[in-house]
Each structure stands twice: as structure tokens, then as C-alpha cells.
Image 1 (tube, rainbow, N blue to C red):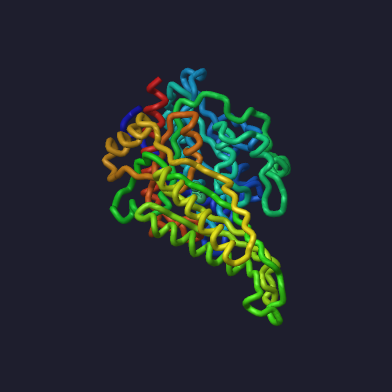
Image 2: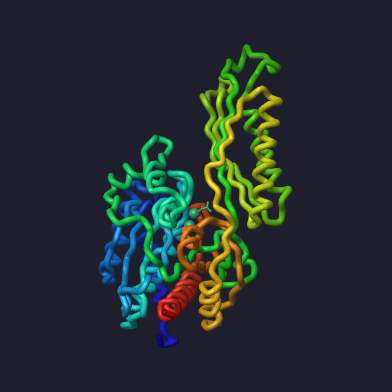
Amino acid sequence: MATNVRINGQRLWDSLMEMARIGATAKGGVCRLALTDLDRQSRDLFVRWCKEAGCSITVDRMGNIFARRPGKDDSLPPVMTGSHLDSQPTGGKFDGAYGVLAGLEVVRTLNDANYETNAPIEVAVWTNEEGSRFAPAMIASGVFAGVFDLDYGLGRADTEGKTMGEELKRIGYAGDAEVGGRDIGAFFEAHIEQGPILEAEGKTIGVVRGVQGIRWYEITVTGQEAHAGPTPMPRRKDALVGAARMVEAVNRIGLENQPDACATVGMMQVSPNSRNVIPGTVFFTADLRHPDADTLAAMSAALQQECETIAEKAGLTLDFNEIWYSPPVGFAPECVAAVQKAADDLAIPNRKIVSGAGHDAVYLSRVAPTAMVFVPCENGISHNEIENATAEDLAAGCDVLLRAMVERANAV
Ligand code: GLV
Ligand code: MN
Ligand code: MN
């Protein structure tokens, strides 16, 4: 490919802004929960754009969408890119959508340049990456990679009991293609960093060499509902007081494992949630992360021990479940090198980086050589409606993606 071929940064930005209108929030972000009507609209827009760009579309049984641009030798395994279009309830315009639309921009650029890669190029939209409506995160790329069964994926339910299978049918994205089970030459995912490192160091590209490990817990604490007035303090079995101590333990375990550990309680349901009833039941989640699997396992063991001790001392019942483990991942050297070379050849300031967030690339890395491209986001803020990134940085990341993909697609 001519070395002066560049993606169209304005077209990428315009597409991002048009996509961000679907589920736009008053504070400038996006609420586009997985498999809602808004998710359907974002998928429809993506599919329309891809068809206009000459791609063929396949949808698999988990609702993953694949837009394919043929290669010179169309029997070769595709070089794939992509990310997700679902968002957090108070999400931003770039988390996920950037990786999907950067892929589309790669296709559009190859079309403009009339350039044929040896292997086909595919752009994927993975269903329910965020895990905020249906836990865990990255379910559909996980089914694709054989980490989860199809039945497990389709059976995951939201808090109202609606399953992914039902909701996929309802929005018209229960496809008939088999999930996974095919060769992929390489997978690349472009994403905003979602942390502060690149911006702080004045680097435009993060060459992502891996992703830290993640463990998710669902914890239910049961005490006894009783009247807030007549019940003396010593007689109480207050589930929320117990849960509060456990939240404190989660935070302490994170602090005790610095510099790399993260530990978060992000969701809590208090029952019956009435101001003059002592809480009888509390359900909450915990999210523990660390790049080292052994340290993460030790954090997990410490949390379970702490929760058991707190519950026992307070006469509470504890139900402690680990519902997800995504082990730390190291990406494929040849794909990391392709990203590094692309950034260096374009003379874009870059550094190697480990992802703090989970991504579909984590599961893809089990079935294909994989790497990621990060670009900075403003103040390192993501999973927030104010999430922001510059058009220039997004374009630079897309140029790196284009080069890395073309290199891999022509290496066969
Ligand atoms: C997935 O997006 C995660 O990092 O929680
Ligand atoms: Mn994301
Ligand atoms: Mn996210």
C-alpha cells in the first residue's frame, strides 16, 4: 500500500458523532444498554454503513455482527477488527463505538484507495461487551472464543429476568451463523485508553501488550428486617451495616495491593429500602483487578475471608459467589509488533501499555493472534458521560489500525 494512504479523520469523527446521537444523554454521553431498542438502532446504522461500503453482513446466534470486505484470496482467514456498540448506563461517546467505527473507516479508506488486501478484512460488533445489563462483560466474544457455552450466553438474564436470547430475537439480531469455530488470521481492537497514562505522558498511541485480570463477585448479606424505632441496637441484624463493612474491606484490599490493584463495589440493592425498616437483605457486586494472576487470587481469598468474618461477628448470613474470572492476558508478539511498527513508521509518539479495562480482544486472543491500539482520553475519564477524546488522536489510532491490519492481511 502506498505509504501516504491515510484514513479520513473528519469522516471518522462525523460517524462517531452520528452514532452518538443514538441514546444521547443530556450531559453529552450515551445510554445504549445491550439489546435495547437503542442498541438495535446503532446496529442498524452500522449495518447500513457497511453495506454502503460494499461489505457483506453475517450475524451469529449471539448477535455478533461481521461486516466483510473480500480479500484477493477470499479463502484466507480474515484479519478482523471491532469492538462494541453497547454502553454503560451513563457511558460516553467513544467507549466501544470508536473501535467499531475505526474498523469501518479502515474499510472506507481501502475502498477509496482501491486497495485489495490478500486476506479479507472483517469488522465485528460484539454483543454485550459492557456487562452492565447482562453480567458478565464480554459474553458474546467469550462464546465466540469457546469460553462460555452458547446456552449460557443466551440464558444470561437482566435484573428484570429478560434473557439475552429473548432480547436478541425481539430486536431482530438473533442471527443463524454458528458462533465462532472459524479461523481468524489476526484480531485488532482500537479503543480509548480509559485511564490517564497516555495523556499524562504526551503519547498519542498505546501499544497494548496485554490486559489485567478481572474477578467479579455477587454477594448477598441477609440479616433480619425489623422496625427502626422499637428495635434496640444490640438486637439488630442489620444487613446494610454488614455490607458497609464489606465494602470497606473491598477498598482496603485494593489499597493494600498497590501500585497495580483495583477494587470496586459499583452496584448495591438494599431491601426493602425503606427508611424506617432495618435492612434485611443487601445484594452487592465487587470487581477486583490485578495484572498478576497470583496477586489477584490472593486478593480474592482475602475478600472472601473478610466477608465471612464480618458476617459471622454480626450474626448475618453470607452468600458469596465468584461469577466471572478473566485471567490476565498477554497479546501475540507479532500483532503487538505490527501496532508498534505502524506507530513508529508514522512517527507517532507511543508507549507500550497494559489495559486496565476488559475488552473483547481478551477473548479473541484465545482464538486468534491479537493486539490493541489505545488513544488518550481527556483526563483519563471513561464510563462517564463526559468521556472525551480529540479527533486528531482518534484519527492517529485509526491510521495505526489500518497499517497493522494491512500488514497482517498481506503477510499471508
Ligand atoms: C469491561 O468493559 C470492563 O473493563 O469492565
Ligand atoms: Mn469498551
Ligand atoms: Mn466500557
